Image 1 (cartoon, rainbow, N blue to C red):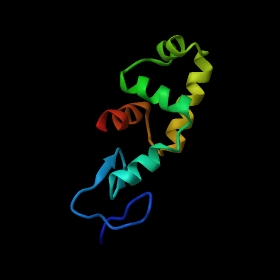
Image 2: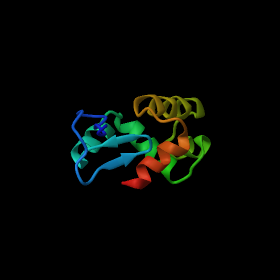
Image 3: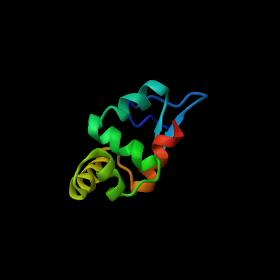
Length: 94
């Protein structure tokens, strides 16, 4: 059975892009997938990739710890990722 892109449903060609458990047929689909995040969520996921804790992210972005916790939770839901480590890896992959 052929693999299908999680964004457009297209079959995988010779090259495919992977983001944790998600798989994409081309770079454009990967970018569309990442665009599901808000601007602030993209800032948070970049800092997650750097290995910062919620408290450190909150301090860097002048937010409360609770707000950062909610952003991380939203990121995991939107990108269908199991852990914050997977979210950090997703950004460092590309």
